[in-house]
Image (cartoon, rainbow over all chains, first blue to last red; front, side, top):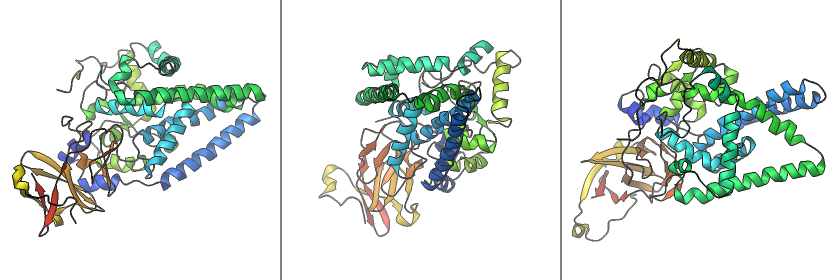
Length: 325
Length: 115
């Protein structure tokens, strides 16, 4: 039997930040808002895809692919929601959507789900949070991270390892033994499909997958890396959810693209609350979570001031949490 | 309607029916947290009647009473593992170990548990 833990939402309820009735109302699921949002996103994707087609023989191809890529890499946000089974009321739809998103952006859904479970259990605790992004030691390291090159290198190693039937020690800290076969199978199926698409492209001579998918994702990924930095990087490595996570107030288009995941502290407080209810949860948790009013830019300025010595580094104090005790 | 019928001679197993909560005080169609002695219990008002389990998720130890309940299934608020609230059966990862269900019945508008 697992030992009892005090989750952030239970703590918030006990401290009266919101009532059970309010929480239960916020947790209600619905397929409709997600289907509408997906339809708009697909329409935008058709527009940016059309821009790529029109720009195919000019230098404008690269900015068109970049725009298209920004849309594509935001599938991370939907996949992340699906990991929590919140965007669709119909549970299996979350599995379908999550797997499709994962295939497009090379983030295996099953593996990510297990990894993300530990991220929520041990948020921002060094040595325990498998998604922890360390505060870079310099501006160069910060730029190196945003370039996405270390991200893709880690992905290559992860796929190679899993497809070869191996899990690393780190993988095993969050993938249970009985799920190892599923993680390995998932990597093999995804790699097989990528290879099949590559072969089909070579045989047919039509390289649409490169121009409309893989290159745009590669070009757009730095945007997603920059967004991911704003969630926890530069916040202290402590268990207290009021401290370790940053909510960013961003523009409506940004919020739309990231499925309201800019309300990141609220999400960590109550991960069963769907993305469409996060703005309302934000209102309820006013003063209870750390908010960056200047949005993503403000978060990056905060990180950069820590890297340049203009502000005390968030990791410049004893880190909590090598154990739950 | 209760989820579990009374078995013969529970006293023989050293257990007795104990009052838990009035049906009127339950969160209708939802899961209600109730403490009995040192035990934290979850009382589910399901489409098939009232069922009771220990309140802690068998995976991460979170309080299931704060999770999403759809009338049949309870989802852990921490990792969204899924259990059948009527049987305790784990239905979706990362939940693997069944919930410990407590026998329950309703007598005179009062939920009783056999403990």
